[in-house]
Image 1 (cartoon, rainbow, N blue to C red):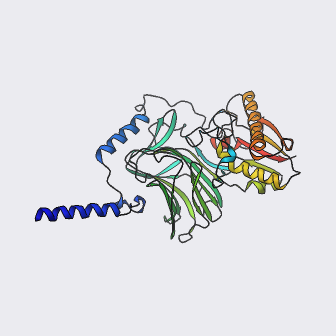
Image 2: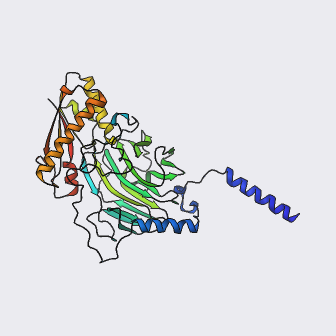
Image 3: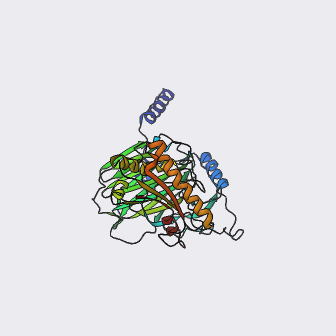
Length: 400
C-alpha cells in the first residue's frame, strides 16, 4: 500500500508539471528555472570556444575606425543576409526606420579585449569585450548582468528615438535578454524580454503582450530594434514586429535611461549598438522638398539594397504615387573611410541601385528618378567620431 501511494503521488506531480503554464523568468529572480548542469557546461564551453579571446597583453587590438568601411550602413548578419530577397515583399508590419541624429554608436572595435566597454555603464554583473568571427562583442560573464547606455542626461528620452543592436544567445538561455526603459527614480517604465518560450514578452504598466518570433530560430544571432514615436513604442526582431503599444504607461513618469540585461549561464552577447534621435516620417520630409534617410541599408562594400530598406522605400514610392508629377534626385553619400575615388564610385552605384528597386519593385517610372553620388565630399558631421561617420553614410531624396 505505501508503494502504491507513492506511485500515485508521483504521477500526480508529473501531471501537474505537464499542465502548468511556463513561468516567465523576467518576473522575478526567484522564479528562474534551474538549468541542467551538463547542458550549462556544454553550452558555456561552446560560447567560450566561439568567442575565445587571447590572454591579456598577448595581442594588441587591431586598428579600428569605429565604423564599417566605405560608407557601409549595415554589416551582414542572419537577419540581413538575404540580400537577394525582394525589398517590396517584406511585410508591411515591419515599419522600422532608424533615427537620423546618431547619439551613440559602438561596435566595440575601439575597446581593449577583455575590458569593460567605454560607452556602457555597469549596473550589475561582469562584462567584457570579446571577439567572435572577426567581430567585437560585449558578453556577460556573470549569470546575470545589466548595463546602461551612456546617453546625455535629460528629463526624458527624446520624443522620437530608435535603438538597434545585434544579440547572440546560446541554449540553454531561458529569458536571456531584457531591454528596459527606466524612470528617473529607478522604476521600470517598460520592458521587453526574449525568449519567453520563443516569444518576446513585453510589459508597460498593466499592459502585457507575448508575441512569437516566427521567421528565425531562437538560438543564435538576432537584430533587435526599438522605435519610439511620441507616447508609442514598437519593438522588432529580424524584420518581425513583435510589440506595438500606442501609449507607454506614465505611472512612473517618462523613461530617462535604457538598460540591457543579459541573463543566462551561456554568456549572451551584444554588438553594433546604435541609439539615435528622430526621425520624422519619410512622406512628411518629402513634402518639404528633401528627405535625408539612414533607413536604406547595404551590406559591407556592396551596392545591393537590403530588405531592411523596405519601410523607407515603401513610403517614398507611396509619396510618388500620390504626387504623380513629382520627380526625385537620389544622392548617395559615404563617410571618409577608404579612398575618395572608391567612396565616390560606391555612392553612385548605391544611388543607382535604390532607383532600380523603386522602378522594378515599386512600379515607379524610371524617368521620374535621377541617381548621383557624392562620395565623402558633403559631410554632415565630424568624420573623426563614429557617430559622425554614421550620420555621413546616408541617402538623400530631393525634389527635381
